Image (tube, rainbow, N blue to C red; front, side, top):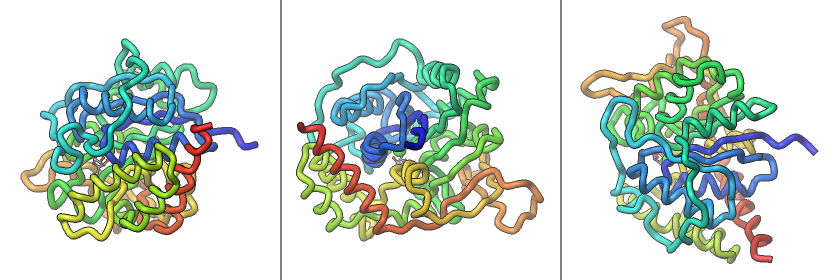
Length: 314
Ligand code: RIB
Ligand code: CA
């Protein structure tokens, strides 16, 4: 039996964060040590409430703490057009059956790293505010971070501006700190996540599994696809689940190493993840950029994950 991989889930649920957490919790390969919330898709109050409802729904009872109320230096940007006013519109969810710890997300992350015998993988699926704060406040703990498998950026295009993807745009200063940290980064940017499309017929495969979690995931997809269908997408790009798939099923992904810089100024390109495709800067790569995915295998992974929750009913 291989050792399970210790992970921290940090997100701004958010429909795709929620599905990412359902996937992570169902994997026998992961040892989820803690969950933390970050402001992004919605305010920190809403993303925290959503995080605790998701954790209650999937019976993920690990330490949870709330993140910072705003990005490191800029004002929050939220995404109600995509995720709704609650940040997780759609199906009814249980009320949280636990309280957040009376410490910050950063303090909880530091505690987990300090107490772990082995280096921990951090899976941020929202803005990188908490992770950057962790690196600034506890630089001595960097050796206890095995890698960061993040959803964010895009080396060819953005989705909130022409140049910038939402998670990076919300807190470019935080992303800059993370990408300069020398910690191994797996970058699930739009280059791969917009290929991780879940089609309506896949929603029905998930719904047909029939347990309460499967039904909720299908209804999250129904809602999440609403925005994307209006933009002409053939399916819902479940961005955040790719950052989890990169850890539990790397063989379904293609990637390339790049030196990536974060634009933190600029009138048109703030928040852009600028990949040095041709090596102009002669710098060693700092990110393994995911570039492709076996979509069918990704869907099978999601179906397998929701099937895990059949046993929860027993
Ligand atoms: O750009 C997509 C990312 O922004 C996803 O993580 C989504 O949840 C939002 O946070
Ligand atoms: Ca997210």
